[in-house]
Image (cartoon, rainbow, N blue to C red; front, side, top):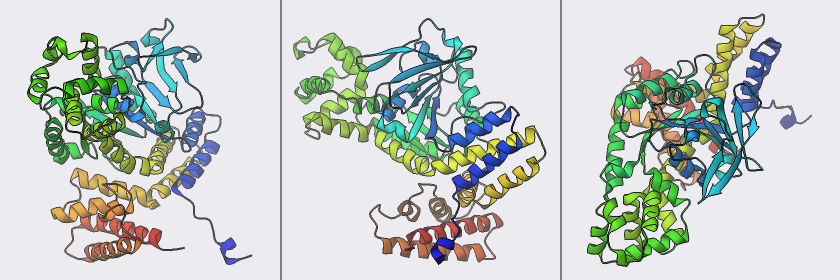
Length: 498
């Protein structure tokens, strides 16, 4: 047998977690927990589950549509907005209603003006536990999105559904991560996010939550510099210690403009060109207010329904921005305009953040959820063999370096790990706080060549070794430094040829 063939196969974190769940199924076979553990094992092979949550009228459904790239989630105040709705990839177009006291029922639906319209078939929203929309979409292959009713809704039962889904009293939440929309930091937002975090693998932690400053274009009353003002507000929020304990980052997004950027039509661009062709002074007067835009300048050639439709799709800020870009030749075609709107709405930045903080960590987040659940099962129902199962969970959690990185990241955000500002900033980067890619950890360009990455990783390794061994380093920072050392060693191992 060759030396290569005799080498043991290194188990991944997913492999080790799957083995724990398989052991758990053996221990709890025949009990009510068996189905729960089997579902968790299956979940390891499924896309990451990200819930979109926030207060009423925060723009959750609009943002979800932007992330999917289609207008699937209802954005009006209809019955469906009071139901938890899952959007998942599949080979066929299908909508199913899951009921509390009856088998799932397939529902009829239609596309009207590009919007998905679901017919509940006489069912009341209170009778439906959740809707599952299966839709072949590129964006849904990597992630299953969950649209939730608004927190703080006037309908207490609708608000309660979001709490029950993401902050259940007994079982683990089915969501691996959450995108939380806020227009400002409300007491209810803080209460919900604190409850969403757990106290096991990484202590009360922001690692599985991103904050979105929603409807960001409204912050400066729709002026062309609205997004610049929103970025400043989001930066202040993100640097607030109380917010840093709750979410990894806060990013401003103009949700309506983001949705429109991925569903833009040539007809809409043609109407915008009519506005762009006006003299600058005339266009500015026309766009002083929504009422003025709809009711003045009949000679413009746009009917009232057409103008109302533009406002519904773009908002006043979006009409101003899009028509200005067309006038200044920043964008010449519908494709160009869509690309510019996606960038200026904050959608591209949010997608990049989701990719670096959630999708690249999807295995870690899913394994984290599963191991938490196994630990909870063992505490709820001790059985012969459950002690060894608990020991396995503890062994995986203690030895898996990604979990150690999450702990340190949480410690940084909560203030448990402190030090000089530049040291803390580098520590957060090295352990993946700004993204798990090698260039992000080393603060280098995405196209940095291998030798530059290796040199930067070696320098970082030397610095963190010194800090870990320095007797004047605080205990908390020394513990964190050893995790950073392991992260740098991992980077160098990945860069080295096999």
